[in-house]
Amino acid sequence: MEKFKNVLITGGAGYVGSALIPSLLEKNYNVTVYDLYLYGNVFSHLKDHSNLTQVKADIRDKNKVLDAAENIDAIIHLACISNDPSYELDPNLGKSINYDAFFNVLDAAKKNNVKRFIYASSSSVYGIKNEENVRENVLAEPLTDYSKFKLECEKILLNFDEPNMERAVVRPATVCGYAPRLRLDLVVNILTIHALINKKIKIFGGEQLRPNINIKDMVRVYEALLSAPAKKINGQVFNAGYQNLSVNKIAELIKDTIGDPSIMFETIPTDDIRSYHINSDKIGEFLDFIPKYSIQDGIKSICKAHESRLIKDGLNNPLYHNIKLMQKVNLK
Ligand SMILES: NC(=O)c1ccc[n+]([C@@H]2O[C@H](COP(=O)([O-])OP(=O)(O)OC[C@H]3O[C@@H](n4cnc5c(N)ncnc54)[C@H](O)[C@@H]3O)[C@@H](O)[C@H]2O)c1
Image (tube, rainbow, N blue to C red; front, side, top):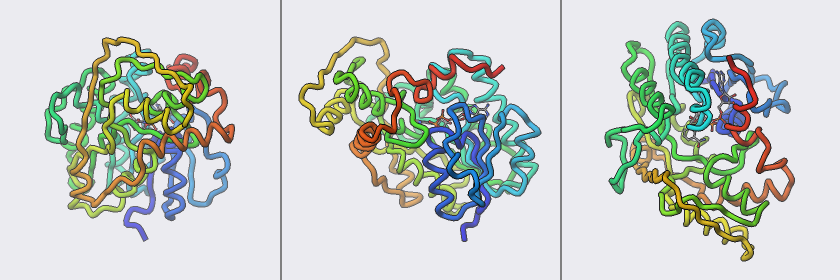
């Protein structure tokens, strides 16, 4: 029996959540998903599952968050406007969800005596670094509001005056691979779908490093943080990445994995020189966490989903592209 059996996952119907929730249910957790379901209901086949509660609501609604956190042991806070372009589409909206509503979730946790709070930050909080090994103690210098508010929320959580609540922060690398709520706006996934459909990969720049983590390992990270003893995680920040490859190398890997020599590369110069290289040894040292799934496994999973026709109009469908969906919804 897990120590924290009742888990609330905000944003649980998103890309990461759509892989995490079925895995937690298999491990006998009682899961509450609290989400606006902006990308549809990926759990319709699980709607009668006795251990799954689904709450369709906004984290900006303080009272609903408070209610949903009743009898909850642990919260994993994933809900947010989850990339720079979607955030920048409407910065006031972005702030109201990614920053202001964070206090609602924290307050609900405190009032309901939630014992553990795990926050999904981002490795983008570091900004551009020259260090070869960007570990958790390297100064974070976020470049965008999305990343700045991620860092702010980290600080608020870690300094929050509630001694009985264990907290941990994860700074994930870019996630890759297939999940039921698929994101095709993330580097490996988008280059793979372009290679599959257009037989052409557009590379902006190319030499920049892009740290990635396979979605299956991302799920394992959250499970490790849920089940770890308090002394290993409380007050800690963990990078969560695996392979740091350049965009050029990712493109070559995709071409090799698909095995189609006709796939072309088109290199386009860019001002976006952001290059990240994160080191994720700490989570291995603290939690014995060893990544098991590679970028290539992620590419293969997208190819398989494409062949099985699980992906519908991968290049244009707003369900797979956060910015396209955010341009259509009104969240005022
Ligand atoms: N996917 C990545 O590569 C990556 C990398 C680093 C960090 N992260 C972080 O991990 C978390 C999960 O990422 P993801 O890729 O699953 O994102 P996602 O966009 O797929 O999921 C976010 C979910 O939050 C929900 N949501 C948005 N606003 C809400 C609101 N006001 N109230 C309730 N629900 C709301 C959406 O409906 C969606 O289901 C995010 O916090 C993201 O910033 C993701």
